[in-house]
Image (tube, rainbow, N blue to C red):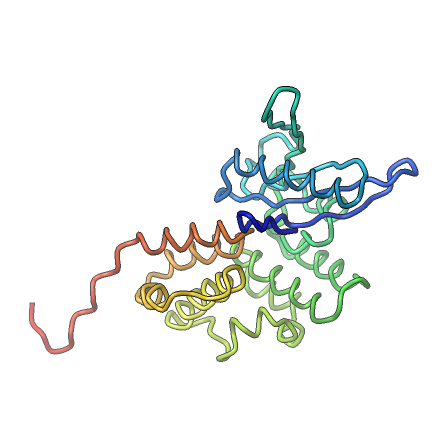
Length: 271
């Protein structure tokens, strides 16, 4: 669902049956790039639009990617925006949830994020998430491959050992993913420092294009000037967890505000 007036995306809505009655459930994934007030307003708009479309009771869940692993698992929050006007939603702290509970309770679209759970940055969790994704019959083989690619990227960002990822996620299967091929179209880049820089830069670029459609040439040149793998990896993680055009623009502003590194010394010059 997209709010055209502000160019924001709500991550999903679906119908469920509870005690024989149809209910609507609006789902959103939240990152630190989303302000609390803006998030609450987005949830309220999603509730009204889903109610208008389906004419059923609506329940909203916000899956927080950056909660505290020792924090409360679920929390009921509300937004008061007028006399007698109140929107409520349930915040689910993904970092406080065990990976087995997550795979049992979370919507299937979120399964690729299993490594973000309290104990999910393990080979066992990645393997079970892979099996659950591959078992879905409501998605095409290519769509399941896209989910496997996200599973790889998120697990890698959470420091799951690369040899475990290679054991559980076959490259042949990942190459069926449009996302994976667009990022690694020029061949395997992992291993060498220059290859890692190119992979991080390409990931950031491709994800931003997916949200915004195009990128300014000047921004591409600014991004390409960075070679610090730690900085680029941090930006890549932020890009992977983006959930709307507004978040994408904020990341671009952050990158543009970062000073360019000093030019490398010219060979043959003396200090």
